Image (cartoon, rainbow, N blue to C red; front, side, top):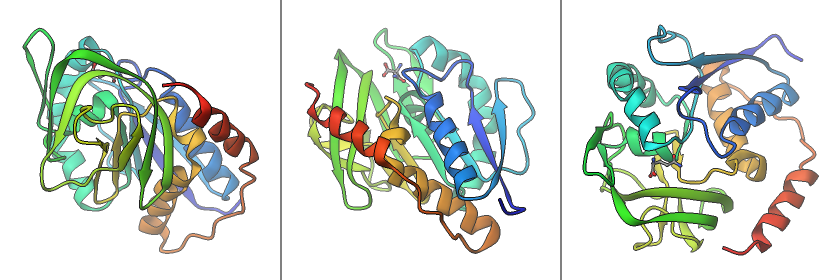
Length: 240
Ligand code: GLN
């Protein structure tokens, strides 16, 4: 253990935290500890004071109703999130918060849940839910494995890149083979499941960015990822 610490902020765990999303935070916490860092984990719910000092931000998915609940608060902290994103703070946004980091989500019943427009994308509820196991291929992280369950169909604008190309599953919209979004040090994706236990390369990317920003150097430990490899091998064989 060194004397360095990293602060993780979990956005809206009360309302936006489904299909194992909390596991992403646990992975980041544990891997940071393995790499020798002390972890300070802050949970942020509507009405809380937004912390001034954060190194890594994580957000999960939620029902449309959960997205309605957090909307006003999210729009209020949008400028702070945007400033942190432009300062290259690493962030992981899953499903419901992936959508609301974009411009808006138009739900099945036709109402608009506004997003903070940090990511150049918009989401429209489609005629069917896109549900099942997902595999994508990305230049940065190789094969990414997860699970999706969303009605929203997300379309990327020109200022963001997809996180990966769909090999199995629907991805952003079931039409253009894109999955997720990449912008600065933000990773946004529809993959729950949870994502990071099965994709440690993404966890270590987020950790490295957080540590490098704060301390200027990152000396990783070699982590024994046998269980993660086994989980990947099993997940990859599962039917859609
Ligand atoms: N409510 C959103 C949708 O159905 C997000 C779902 C989720 O976060 N899993 O598209």
